[in-house]
Length: 318
Image 1 (cartoon, one colour):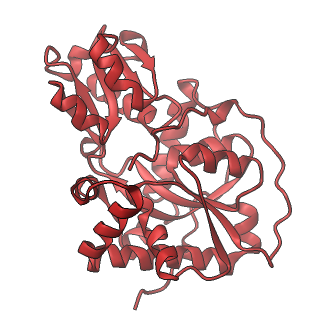
Image 2 (cartoon, helix red, strand yellow):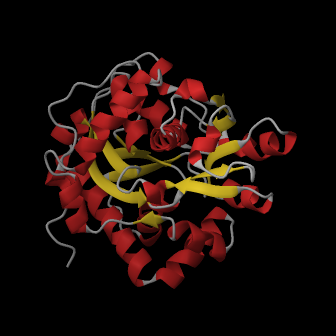
């Protein structure tokens, strides 16, 4: 279920690449990778709810979608808000057209038993994958702790290597997510902070290029509607959805249930609020961009007049 497990690409360091032409006769190529918040689209594909105007390009990690957008090979993608901002900063203007999920505990700080408070991180080695969303989570932790980055030793490490570093004594704390969080807890780690402590901060989104938003509006609407149809199935037929997801991902149904418990799947009305002008997404995006630039994780703050576009949301789901 790890959308970020293999994410080692720092998009901010990539050169911006030109977009290829976008033909109306071609399907809207949409990058996607395994993560519980994106399962709505996998289910829509499985049930045949994706029309021919939309094609899912299935990768293994967010880096696949980010690279595809930069290369002009994709028209849309499922990405966290910070990942979308990094692509935008690298020269590909994007619009957020839907929020697929909000992290409410999926991202977590695990610490050695000797660290009993966030202030206790001072002078300790903290692992985080800076090129992914765990980097954003780390800065939220430090802000809450009243610490600066030079008051801790940041170990930039892919999350799938945190357990090894923990066992070898290389790190004292880890910013991670399931299943690594549970493994560290079994090894004696303590959960000191998670994304439920910073509500409405870590968002997974559907983004489209500005070119696709202008020229392929019908296909973008088809994509967004397919997401909501898949999400409705997850809510109304959860038992069936859980077993479909478990089978596709090769994991246990209990693991799927645990993943679902750490995310909130916004309804249509919540999406309308999130994507409103000066709404939560735009507010969080500005803060994220400033943090990413100040910490050297993004070259510059993207310049845009419009980041979110609610016009692609369906009027109703009846």
